[in-house]
Image: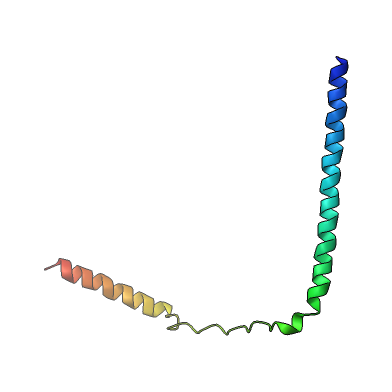
Length: 86
């Protein structure tokens, strides 16, 4: 192993620690700012009204019974057979 290689490995390790350290510091600052923002905005919640929940609209027509569906299917088949028999 060349002495130059050892120097490169040391430099890479220092760069690795510096990058991970900066990321860790950034995440800690982000958590702090998020908590601070949450505390500040909690005081102003009364200025923004809560959105009203709208009731669901009823279905256009009630669901058909099983017998009604069968009757419609039978009528459709009869109409097709009648149309084809001409």
